[in-house]
Image (cartoon, rainbow, N blue to C red; front, side):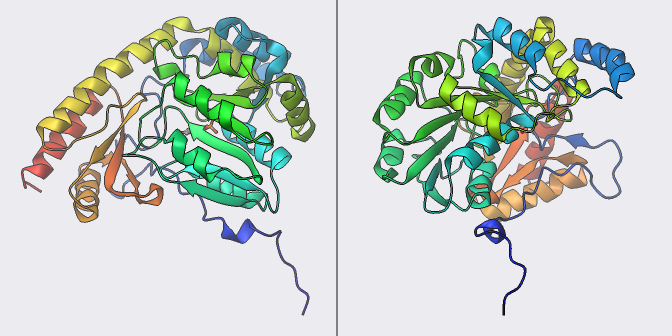
Amino acid sequence: MAGIEPQPGIMEIALYVGGKSTVDGVSNVIKLSSNENPWGPPPMAQKAVRRVVHEMHRYPSTDHAELRAAIAEVNGLDAARIVCGVGSDEVLQFLAQAYAGPGDEVIYTEHGFAMYKILAHAVGATPIEVAETERVVSVDNILAACTERTKLVFIANPNNPTGTMIGLAEIERLAMNLPPQAILVLDGAYAEYVEGYDGGARLVDSRDNVVMTRTFSKLYGLGGMRVGWGYAPQAIIDVLNRVRQPFNLSNIALKAAEAAVRDTAFVQKSREENSRLRAWLAEALAEHGVPSDASTANFVLARFGSADEAAACDAYLQSQGIIVRRVSGYGLPAALRITVGDEASCRRVAHCIGLFKAGAR
Ligand SMILES: *Cc1c(COP(=O)(O)O)cnc(C)c1O
């Protein structure tokens, strides 16, 4: 009997579960589960938002010209080849919608970001998960998985939740050897945390098959505003702008992001404090017998002896009002992802993990 059915693939999607933000019975939780900036939103963005409240009755810009100009200026890019989205998640969605469908394959890696699989299913394409090498993306494995049906290859560099990254030479080798119908998407959600790394922007400039995505949600401290952007060859930008809704970003989001991108003092402080505290946290955890890979992002992937131990530690931390992220859904059941918070939060989470490891739970 005919009935109402969604498009193929939709029911394959496992609903996204975000980082927790509350613990029953605990006020003043320390939230280290969503890789948010511990310094809050940039002061200049807060000021810009207060100013724009008087414009809420107006429709926003459809071409995002001012925000694109600001991003281009600060990052040394061509503003015409930037597209802005409701978080970089929306830019990733434009790519899936425009370039993949039933019968096509979308590649991502073993511990890759959850959205890649969701987006592949959402457009009816076939998700192809490729093994990593000790929690690091393997270009050889990706190339071996490519077929004439491969349309998109998603890698986050640095990756979430592993915190590891691969070098530009490896990325270029991947781009050069992809089949002709495939696009390499470099998800640079954490690119700003890496000193001297352009997220792959120069590679986008020099090739026709590479797209970079970036976000205001992490280092720029605007996760709640939902603004991200993509940088791509003109031919791809012209395609993405056709599936983008004309009013996808609000006045408030546009102004906040524009101010944030120009708040260089905030950016510098966020990057420096993150590097310092990330190193401190990783070392403190190692001293308690909890190793992690060298992270290039704003979190540390803490590895425990077993899934049971990770679960027990997570429960203990919650009882102490600390929320971190379990990453079983990313194929890492024995690990916990811990956002690098401010100094007090880093000290507190390291102290509690030390107590847990010492058996004092
Ligand atoms: C957080 C994150 C994003 C993006 O988030 P938006 O808030 O949608 O910009 C994208 N990719 C990775 C790997 C992330 O961790």
